[in-house]
Length: 283
Image 1 (cartoon, helix red, strand yellow):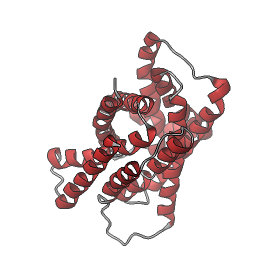
Image 2 (image 1 turned 90 degrees about the horizontal axis):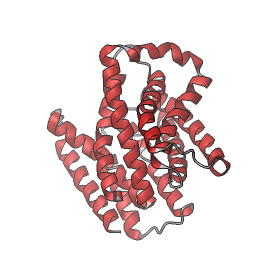
Image 3 (image 1 turned 60 degrees about the horizontal axis):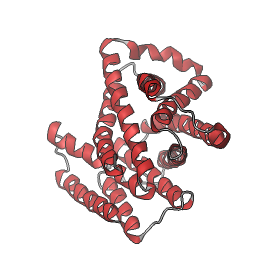
Image 4 (image 1 turned 180 degrees about the vertical axis):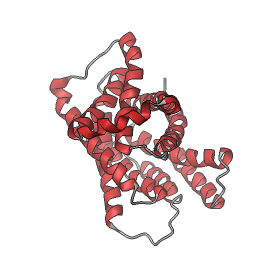
């Protein structure tokens, strides 16, 4: 499969992951950190039989053991801060802050993987990130408050963790590494915060478990497609293109959920994003 096909699959699944997560998290009785633990463990478990049938291959621990541990710890810290920050910052603002992780992934591709980074790459990346920023709906002036700084910190942590994930994945089996990455973070969170286990029961009830299973399947495909794109393509080009899934999510909401507020701005953001993607594809 080409990296463009992997990207197309990822854009589709990414646009579904966030709405599914919100659907599960917005209900009363839902604990965000317990959700992280259960959803990721379930996703890894669903992938397990396919990985065993394919052939399980552990990454070279002598070479990647330390980066793996660092990645799992960073993701654990990042997810906990994610849950706390989302309570303090408007969702649309937080999404923009989180998308700053793309900058760190692009830098990793340029500095660590020694990829070529052209002017077209720079302009295309800037346009994609700007299009996401256009979607921010603020009721109050944007200030560099503690919660905003925390959101930028989450973006940095996720950016470094994602860079490590891609770096290891570039030299590892696609199915095996994707599955392993779903197990490490929740295990660390559960070990550091054992009381998380007491809040997991909510997610094993009837319709909640069904919705969680659907999310797990979509999330597994999403991560496989993401890593596949990074392995087959150029990191500094793939990373910003994958961020355009935010625009796709908005368009899906406009068409199917009839969310028509600020419609002109959303359409303009989509056009800007499309232009940025075209530049990156042509770079």
